[in-house]
Image (tube, rainbow, N blue to C red; front, side):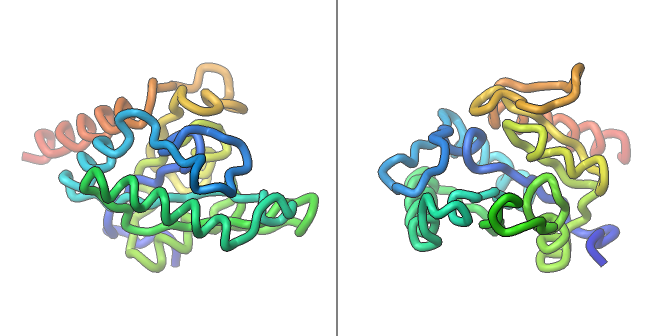
Amino acid sequence: MHRQADGRRAVFVDRDGTLIVERGDLGDPEGVELVPGAAAAVRRLKDAGLLTVLVTNQSGIAKGLFSFEDFEAVQERLVELLADEGVRLDQVYMCPHHPDVTGPCDCRKPGPGMYRRAADELSIDLARSFYVGDRWRDVAVTKEVGGTFFLVQTGAAGQGAPPGSDRVADLAEAVDHILAILKHEEVASA
């Protein structure tokens, strides 16, 4: 089904360069550092009743740069840092593939696989959801499934985005816009 019409709204957040500081192919939990303001931004999303779903390409696994266990250790460190700030993510989806090594797949961003899986598992309406990332491939899925995207200037600073694409400073500013949209919708429907 994938779309879950009238399903829940979610915010799909990229990991490296959006939620945590970009470090390339990160397989060491010691390298995990939250982007300033990111935990507070996630808290605001949760307080607004939105699902917060992490979607991340981790091709370093396919390339042999780090193992799945290394990825899990990095994720555990991220969970700890967020928990220290009193927040948690609702779900994490990861693509370990790289087309040059494993061949094509539908889960690697910008493909829709991780988003469709989330829609099915969490009853998410993709067309009414929000997408935040530091690269065009993190948000390009909106051209296929709908939704509203925000390119952040942290990390890769919107790498690959078409000219004229709107950009925001960071996850915190994206959340400002998301909450403003929700407030406007609430007022309009009253």
